[in-house]
Length: 224
Image 1 (cartoon, rainbow, N blue to C red):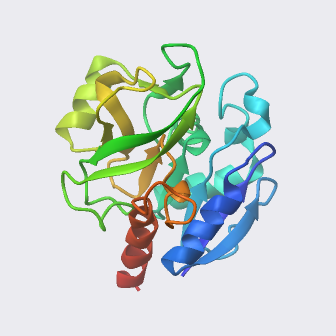
Image 2 (image 1 turned 90 degrees about the vertical axis):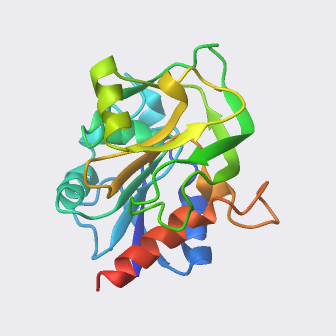
């Protein structure tokens, strides 16, 4: 199973995401922001970093990259897409997910091992987890506060589309402690913390992030 990992100018976690795909048992396919072809991949990861230098707003320029039209079309057709950190910002800017990511409420960049609770285990990227499971994966962002109007937040809560929630502390001012969400279909997931940095004991605080990648591989495999 082929999982594409997009590299934008300023991406810095693309190789980590590709490594996570390989550790999970998939084939990582490098996709370039200027491509107009997804090269037959079964799913796509939009990695963390600072695409286009975070000019204008985080993700605001990346949404216009040629590859993104293919990603948007694929996502609307049911292809699994995971946006991590900057990738989450790009998904919101591309209107594949609602809301926006804004400057951390304390106005400082934060980097820490963050405890989360997994709240939705039916999305394409979370079926390997148990409902309510607590995990620890790294978090590093300066514009990680998820915001949306109350009606949108109520809909996300009511429809079970909150993927993960911050525990112990709210590190960036995200409304309702939201760390990640999915679309109505469950194939598109945005997550502010970095699961790709917690897939092996040698380099991560845990291996808790591996479940995001094994989930999509299992889902794609079962659909064939």
